[in-house]
Each structure stands twice: as C-alpha cells, then as structure tokens.
Image (cartoon, rainbow, N blue to C red; front, side, top):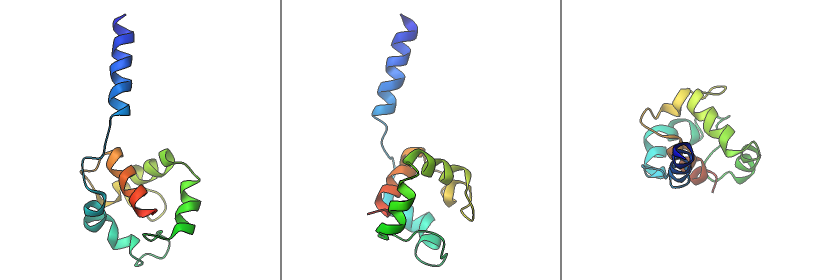
Amino acid sequence: MKKLLLAGVALLMTVQAQAAQDPETVYNRSCASCHNGQMPIAARKGDTVAWQRLLEKGMDTLVAHTMNGYNAMPPRGMCMDCSAEDYKAVIEWLSK
C-alpha cells in the first residue's frame, strides 16, 4: 500500500511540474548567444521549419540534448540553474 501511495505522489508531482523560470528570460540570459543566428547550426527563434524537424525527435530527446550537450551545444545549454521543465518551456517558446 505504501509503495502504491508513493508511486501516486511521484506521478502527481511529475504531472504538476512546471517551469520555474520565464522562458524568454532564460533565452536572453543563456541561449541567445547561439540561437540568435551567431551559430548557424543552432535553430533560431521562430524558424518553424528547423524547429519542426527538431521537435519530431521528441521533447524528451531535445531536453536530454540540452542537459547533456549535443554537437556544438554545451551541456546544460549555458543555464546551470535550469530544470528539465525550464528547458522544455524554452524549447516550446523557441519553436513558436
């Protein structure tokens, strides 16, 4: 019974997880230096074609790439205080 209760609480916490930081603020502080066009391989804000291709990989993959680094992207995307939820919110914001 205790295991079931703990599993339920863990699931509830996961479902209710939200970004703690404003995506635009995180972008301006940590992401813009590459995603504003200075790094040609980094998808730019609003480039729906590039972001559609990336989003096809799945949000979990994109968040993992951000957290672990991928190609020229440094680990944690230069945001050392971001959570997975923060990264997801920034990716969603960038892709629109």
